[in-house]
Length: 304
Length: 153
Image (cartoon, rainbow over all chains, first blue to last red):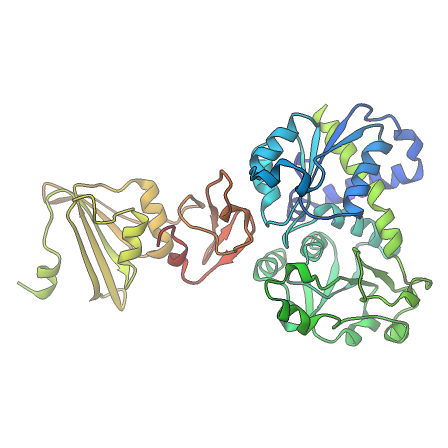
């Protein structure tokens, strides 16, 4: 890896991505080989928003490398509640840990925090901004299922506020991928992401009708319409539940269509899909551990 | 003496900013942190006919020569402006503004969910694109009405 901070998928080259994914595949094949690789390493977890998968998979990843975590806990139980700035919080935790993982509801928080610390800082989600490590595990899952070149991907749901979408869209520009974006008009990709995709020469199509793209894609990446990102609840109610797939929706899909979701899902994917060969979302979540082990291994190795 | 000459009579020492996009003169003053309370003579002429622009504004500041950084920032809202440095009633330097790669601590991000708008110890930081500016923290791109982002505007 060329970068000691992982802030945005935009900073990741094809070589960076393939380096992490290749390392993750090695680790997944033989996790015992790295069990003590980073003994005594401490990972600082600074989560200012609720998280299940990301936080637990980072904790699992460092522990499976022989290290451990120091966790600031919930915002309610930390000094943040007393009005401490983010800059101060990360500067304090930096003194306890060899690398930091930050999730924060404000866009740009990871970039700002990285300017105040010298240990590697990993963005685990900054508001509606970026979520680059989710993207790495998404790419790992896509590569296992369909490959990363000559692939057609449908990305569905909240494209405006969805940080996993923004990161994935950026990262896919490194590959020969066609991206079909499906959303209500009010939740289309933001200008800043369009700008980067255009600059990168990405092949993109935009749709409002999910059924129209189902037969065309190799991967269907569903996302939740996130109530917590909407400034106005009425705006959320207008689009909630707009895109949902079930076995009827997928009747026209290719047999080897892979359905993904960064989770948590609410009602975007009917439970009846879970038992089909299309469902990859739980495997996708599980892939978070070897991918984050690989990333931490590369970052900590570069530090030593 | 013509109307034009009456409006823009000579100053002894200072800076004349000419060919400002019509209507932007007050924003230029904001960028230069000229509030009118410092006692320095400042002349502002707005919406006068121009050969190059449909209308232009002119700002004359007596007793002050602009820095390169100030000139760079002016380019965001007045890309056609020319800077004339005046000493003893003579133009001793004349140059056009150039767009900088980045402007720091001048604009505020319009995204209310951007970390740079909160109570954190950072200055705003914008990358200057060909026809827009882009927040270095949240990536928000602003093309229109950049002047509205000037702090304290």
